[in-house]
Each structure stands twice: as structure tokens, then as C-alpha cells.
Length: 496
Length: 95
Image (cartoon, rainbow over the protein chains, first blue to last red):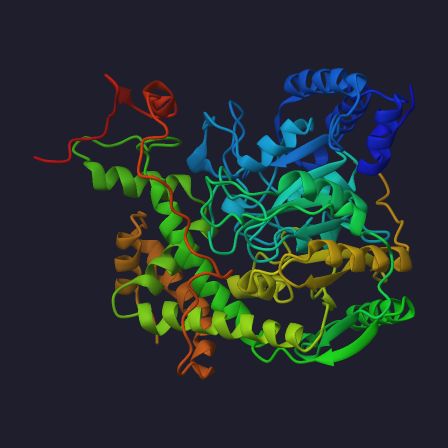
């Protein structure tokens, strides 16, 4: 049996499985061994190893019969935000303690129907609210990368921090993530992997614990662009159970990876050059633009004038939607219920349950959302933010109408920071992590991050490409071209 | 725009989250930081701009008004903290 099967990419594993060189059982066992040795990363938080072995065995039967789909037999980690039938699914929140869904999310159903294997559930920020995986009821997930000569524990980013850490440390071949303001792309950048948030409506939201429904999208987090193309294809498609799911055919994203972007127009938005951006990030951005130019693309400076207002608009819209979505956690139908004092009525039950079950960041956002939707403030905050959102989307529509095919930006304003480093900062400082990614959610566009370099301390840095709606194939082809040119092959040195 | 502790208490009440009296000043301060950040939206000229309803232009799908699911009482109740005789049980609501 080959060693280190867990280090394969999805594409390599698919080909080896189809040739019969390896079995899914061997591949799955290799990942389970890697997971059991990686407790220090705190990436996997619910063990489904028994289920994984059964799924692997079923996948091997299909593979032997021939004609198995691309994802057949591929071991994955699943973010805890996805409801998985009979398996704890608690969005890293105490309020969903003990919750075992009676149903399977559409995205995981599709992956499992394609033969993918679930290794376990992955750590994340509570209800996907966070940029560092520090708001999780399971404790911090830890980045497998460290600064050179320094053993300080770093954040893998958030909210899909467990997914990012698991993929970067080769604990699984790929992982599901979700992205409301940058929660796939920022952690992917912090851990040197690839992640794509598809166009809003591409992946069904059914069975994914809701945070901000007009912004939430699921997507893959993988070791390569090709793997993202393969896995995304298995995740998306129309679902009548999600009224915002697009009734459109799913193209073959992998077939779009030609590496030919000659004549494509790549926009560089001047507004993304923000004050205080580290020189390393500026250099990376300029290098990325040079690489795309060398590949035959035309580089064009563009303007997205409302960029500055994206984060403030997001911090009205997302908490507003969250306050409404999270109203369902009341201690009645599922999850945690506070123990009550004699004489306590139903209001006390709600208030105590929610105070005990929600962590501080979730409480904060639910209350901010409640405030911006309350009588007298609805117009000033919520409606104004929705108008600004219209303007942000219009900025993108304008540049696409002018012939821009994709937009290149940095993925994050810094490399991964230390766990606990932001503890004394005010909440807004943490929100600034999403400054380059949040516009994409507000405009409903596809966005992908690709590892493109390392900072002076050896930490990975990523670049983001933003595409036209529904053109994930073309976007992934640009990302593939960038990936090949950047030649990022570094891996974290194993310390865990 | 500044949030005082009584406003913070009112918001907590509306959100049905118990916040102890001594935690209110810190909460009010956090609200003020976040709202101060949001205030920037006031600079934007939004005259004549429609508030976004749907990020992708779409018509809400419709289907025939008929029962498509049901008869799953035990599964619906399987995660309830307290379920009795086929119902969710809660503290007394009406005196």
C-alpha cells in the first residue's frame, strides 16, 4: 500500500482510484490516521470514522463496477454548519448542543450521492460569525503554518477555519466551506490553499445552518484549483427546496481549465489599495498582475467607487438577517434549553436559553441586527445599507459591461495573525479582515482565492479573483493560470 | 448617535437575550463602536436608488398549493428538549 495517500489531490486520487491502484478504504484510512495524529490542530470536532469506513467500502464497490463519478471514494471534511443526518451538526454553537438532524443538507447529499466519504465534522466560528475561528464552542482551530523560528499558534482564519486547517495539513483531500463575507476565501488564503465562493444561487442553502441568507453560499476548499473545479461541480445544481437556488445547468468546470487566458481583460481596482496595506501584499498583488499579463491577459486599472462602504453595509445587512434567522433558537424545538427557576415563564426560558447558548460575538451581532431593524432605525440603517448594496453591485456591473472578464485583488490585508492577538481589539478591527472579500458577497459574484506567495516569515499569502456571475468556469481558468504561474508548492512543516 | 445602557437593555430584551445589569455598559460601548463604523453609510448619496431585494434578478418560484410532505411527528420531535404526548412542551404561557 502506498504511504501518505492523504497527501494526494482530489484529481490524483480520482485517477488512482479509477485505475484501481488504490482503494477508497486505503485512502480513507490514511486520512483517519492523519486526523488522529492532528488533535493539536483541533480541526475535526465530530468523529464519523465508522461512517467513513462504510462509505469508503460502498465507494469501492461502485469504483469496481466502473463509471463512478469524479468524487467517488474521495474523503472529505464537512464544516459543522452543514446538517448531516444522524451526525452532530451544531454550527460550533452551544445552543445546538446535542442536535442530530433528521435530514441531510442538499450539498452534502449531492457529495455523498457522488460517492464522497465524510471523515468528520470540522471546526468553525460559531454560526460562521468570525474571521479567526476563535468564537467556536469547540475552542480554536489552529493553523498548521507557523512563523519561521516561532512556535506561536496562528489562526487558520474564519469562519471555515477547521476546513482550512484540515486541508492544509492533509487531513482530508478537500472540505466544504461556507462564505458569507469571506469565510471560505480568507481562511484559504491564511493556510495556503484554494477556495471558491460560487455565484449566489449556485449551491443550495437547504440544510446549511443559516447566518445571513442573502449572502450565504457554500463552496469547496481544496489543495488545487483543479480540485475546486471538480468538487464544486459535485456540490452545485438546482434545488427546489431553496427558493434562491438557480435553475441552471451546471457546466463542467474542470473542462474550462485550459490555462489559456489570452485576450482576457483583468481589472485591477484602485480602491483596493488601502492605507496601511503591507508592502508584501502590494508586491504580491503586482506580481500576480504581471503573471496574468505574461499569460496574455490585458491588465486594466478599474474603479469600484463604493468599495469603502461595503464593510459598513455588510455589518448592517448580515446582523439584521442573522437576528431574524437566529430567532429560531428558543429552546423549544431542538438544542439547548436553560434550566429554569421556580416561577420562570416562557420569556425567561427564551432569554436564559439564548444567553447561555450563544457566545459573545453571536449575541453582539444578534443585538446589532435587532437594533438596526427596530422601529425608528429601519430606514436609517437597514434600508440605507440595502441601497448602498445596490450601488456596490452596480459598480461591478459597470466594469463587466466595459469588458472586464475578471478582477484581481489581494485576498486579505495581512498574513495569518496569532490566536489571541486580536483579543483586546474592538470588534471592528476583526471585521476589517473581510475588507477585500465582502464586496463579492454583497454583489452575489463568484470569488476564488489562490495561494500566490509567502511573507518574510514564511506564511502563505493569497490573491483573489472575482468573476462575472455564473462564469465560475472562466474564473477558475484564470485562477488555474495564476496558480501555474505562481508555482506555490510550499507546505507547512509538520509540528503537530 | 450614542447608545446608553437603557437602550442596550431594551435591545437585549427585544432580542430575547438575558444580559446582566453589570454587563450593560460594556455592551453599550461595543454597540457604539459598531454603529460608529456603520455611520459612514450616511456619506453615500442614495437618492433614487432602490434598496436591494434580491442579488440575482429572479422571480420567486411558485408551485401548486398541495401537501408534499408530512406525517413525520416523531422525527420532528426527536431533538426537542421536552416533548410530551406528541407535542413540544414549554413552561406555562397563559396564566
